[in-house]
Length: 477
Ligand code: FAD
Ligand code: MLT
Ligand code: ZN
Image (cartoon, rainbow, N blue to C red; front, side):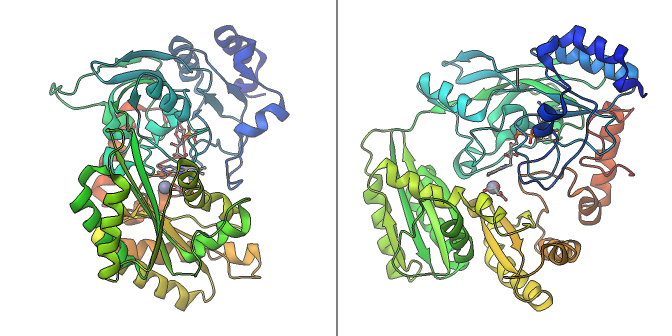
């Protein structure tokens, strides 16, 4: 029997977290061991669910002494297998989902201090009840947690105006791999006292420590909104349209999401209650949202002015503006439904790339061409946050193709897409992280010096390599 499954180890863990903080029953463990897409499964010796920072620290200290590896987990909505343990059954999953306290709201400082297990939607709700806005917004917001958002530096649909998780964070609290607690919960907008260590942990995907709490920025609540669904002739038109709307509306432009006809077709086929808002099929669409802090701001009029200019310029083929909140929600449903819809079409090969915003059209044109030449008939589901230069360039099998035969091409498909990303000086992961799916690709496509510096940081903070092994860096590296 290995130490991690020995009665003594389990007894010591239980003495820290109590029986409510321990999951050992295989049936209850299952949901912690498989990811949202069913793309990754693992085994674990135990699922441990501490209720506060001191318990996290005690568990981490014990695992450090016993040389047991830990896999931090929040809502388990990550898309790269980062929260799933390996197959050995020797790792411990450390779930932060019992740490759900909102510790403080400071309206005058425009900050909220929350624990890592708070669900993003609950955080948005708490901000709203305090008359403020927490702007991070993404399809998984009903189940992803602040800890996971921080550990992956999550992006989503409002980055255009407010930035990603890194930009929304002023301070964090972290349990280091040896069990010491770093209290960096400072709500300061200015602090130039050396290296800004929080940024090492944000985006580190659980490989440097366990994030237990954070001080996050709040923004003025918005009281007016206008949402449009627009058909476009091309991605070039989308880029010109963003530029035009931004020029007119400035920061009122909070969202600009583009999606291909193929993406919309998947949603219409698989997500209940959806309908095409326009009468004719067009190659590309954009979902555009304006918001203002003033009630009754003339946003619909502004959007109409922008869109009629765009019609004249040939940038827009057709458009509909939502006339109430439920119509706006239905339009967002078409966009947010893409990930789930694609799961119904067999394995989806996900590529979360970014290139400079101006290069999106050329990237799509050249990559589509290269892929179709090598793998005729593959269905390219491209969509995403193109205002941030971030495209979810996901691939589904040709109609009628065999799942296993299609998946056998995964590496070759990835290679074409990442080569093209490199040609545009882009990134192979804009917002989802490396997890266990992309460490090898990162070594191939990132500057070797960057990888060397990252490894040096990992060795310094986690010399025994017990924090989420096999993530960000491949296990054998
Ligand atoms: P998990 O999946 O549990 O973990 C993710 C990673 O963080 C793992 O490596 C884990 O080890 C680590 N981790 C978790 N908690 C901690 C902690 N407290 N301390 C240290 N490490 C930790 N992402 C985007 O960025 N933008 C999107 O638009 C977006 N849309 C999505 C839509 C859908 C439908 C789905 C399913 C996912 C989407 N995602 C998106 C991906 C995912 O939801 C986000 O990355 C989210 O931030 C992950 O949070 P989580 O709590 O589920 O983390
Ligand atoms: C999204 O923006 O919908 C997700 O980040 C993309 C995905 O599921 O691939
Ligand atoms: Zn996304």
